[in-house]
Image 1 (cartoon, rainbow, N blue to C red):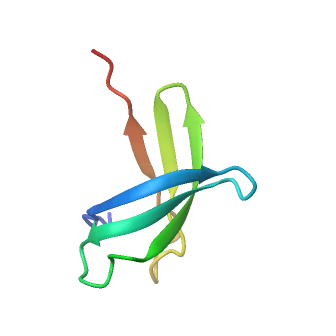
Image 2 (cartoon, rainbow, N blue to C red; image 1 turned 180 degrees about the vertical axis):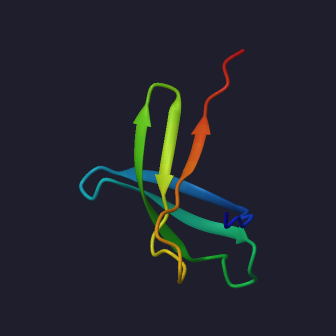
Length: 72
């Protein structure tokens, strides 16, 4: 199984017309990440958010990031 740690700090907003979350990168794994943008298709069901990063790295056929809200 392929695994990679991806870390970044970004502001985001929902772009309803395109059906994506648009991330404005501030910091990331690579020095040139700051100032770039990334669009992620997403699915929100209840307290679960799934992001679908694109483009996919070479050799990767599927990639998703699943987040779940934690309630007190």
